[in-house]
Image (tube, rainbow, N blue to C red):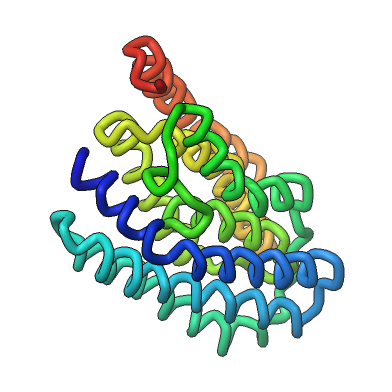
Amino acid sequence: MNTFWHSIARYNEATWLWQAIIVFVGVVVTLWFAIRPSKRTTLVVKLYTTVLYLWLAVVYFYIYCSERAYNEIMALFWLILAVVWCWDLCVKHRSEERVEPHKPLGYLLLFTPLLYPLISMARGLQFPTITSPVMPCTVMLYTMGLLLLQRERVNLFIVLLLCHWSVIGLAKTAFFNIPEDHLMTCATLPAVYLFFKDSFQLDSSHKGKPGMVYINALLISIFCGIAIILLWSMYRQFSSGSFL
């Protein structure tokens, strides 16, 4: 645990100015994308996200988390995500498949990363040993918000990789005493449900079984089960007093 929080403190202390610049650029790009959605703004926000993922892979994990075990694997994980975003940036915009954006949840997730440092300070933590908006779990929440606002079919490979990270986040909430990440896991469930629901609806033109009604029921059942597990995990952590 000490290694985990020490690496976060090193990262924040050395890069706080760069993080502030990244957040400022992100706010500008995101507002442009939200107010004037178009192919151009979609490409710009995807480019920003690609750079963000490269930052996490190289600066966060490879450089400042070098004292953690398996930091190279984590860096490789986010590097793979950055490569997938590059591919999505170059190819996916040509797709003619369209979905309706999920604006309420999308807008909410876009700005939840700003809550992370506030939650850390509410728990009694002080800079630089706090979570920040430019860390893996906060960037994952931001990404989910962007994907929910897209009008094109979502790349499910990106979604599955982010889900994998969400599961890792759930596992480390108690181990590293970082309850802020419950916010990430809670937000992931409805977002992933909507992604898969949209994907199946786009494929519903193909004649086959099971039908959309059954697929929707199956998705709801699966995510309700995951939600129960999540609530049980949060209850155990809360009852043990490790939220503080």
